[in-house]
Image 1 (spheres, rainbow, N blue to C red):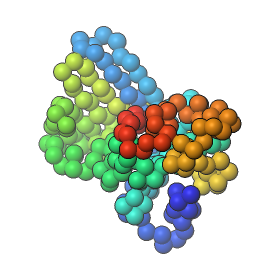
Image 2 (cartoon, rainbow, N blue to C red):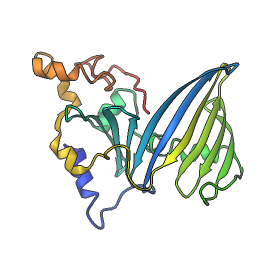
Image 3 (cartoon, helix red, strand yellow):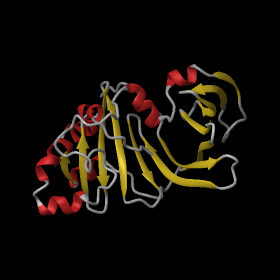
Image 4 (spheres, helix red, strand yellow):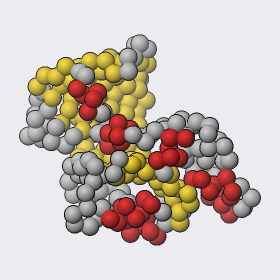
Length: 240
């Protein structure tokens, strides 16, 4: 699988990547509240980010999304940790599924906001966070009033608030891990130990009883339970 090979190469000295980000292991909380806000629906999730890859995982979940940006190419692996299985998606698969595989998509995953989105908003100084400077950005993103507190040193927002006509959605950094992690980060070695299947081959597995059994557990894997054969159909996938 191309992903594993690139991941191993990225560990070698002198291997150049298109974009590098500071390492970040953190817990975030996404809350959604209908206006007038009386009760919020909250979800906690983890971001385990390296220079050119990011693993996103709901707290206490047994699956995660692993994304990697290399040489202007975005690849994705749907990981099922309990079964030690993985579904590998190429950038072509992502585009055909309507998910996208551009640099802006990578930035939205790894930084929660793109560089062009930041540039489109008004900036003012913010209060320090853990002795690091912050910046406040206010403006409109995709027609939604947005206020964002940005941490330049970490290349991540401390908080983002989206004000829709009927609801407010807030994403905030709750805890930054600088030691022991609450879950094991997926490594290149671990990936090699998992059983991999390419997304394009899943349609040929529908008569394999063993494959059907474990694929039934991949409830939110993009495209798996929509159309196995027709990769031209778009399927929306909710990214953490």
